[in-house]
Image (cartoon, rainbow, N blue to C red; front, top):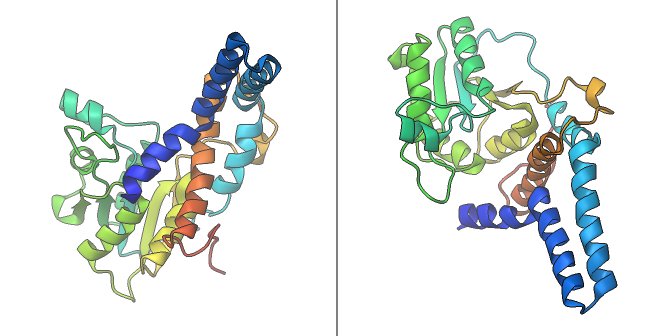
Length: 267
């Protein structure tokens, strides 16, 4: 139930959707002449919000704290396994085309392949099934397995978890599948903006020995704090992405699926 509520709920509060609906609602109210001034104000607010979130640096302001929260480790030696979270494979296109199609988060898989070569004794665990309400024709695990084979990673090093649909299920189902031991150490690979929530969720699910390895950065760092966007769609895409993570942090904490509101590296 949580999965479906999260998907449907976010559709309506996603900023780019919400501001468009607000503008259309305002125009409709104004056209009907019920509360013309109120309708015009709503419409203007929606249009201005779309412009501000799409062109100004505000999207970078809210994504930077997420991306900067967890640094990469200085060394990757000695880890027992590499856990990469789903999100890199477009399951709909993969299923339709019969070959792996990557999303904008494709670095999750490509950098995992590099880490696998740097830590030859580590197992590679990909966790991700289908994250859509309407089932697609392939799972993320299937697409990832094909790429791992292309990258030359032996099949006996790869563990695939193909039923999870969100970060909480990633953590819980992978833990059941792998049965990690207290003395083992693991690299957790996911997009930098998603890493705070991922680390909080895995810790809450009982994982120990985890080290964050963020990838898929969307900014250069502080250099982008005051950088705007050349197109509204670009800025809105980043704003939606970061907004979703902040909402996810709050919701996961309130529902007991995260160890803290804004997880941070252990000292």
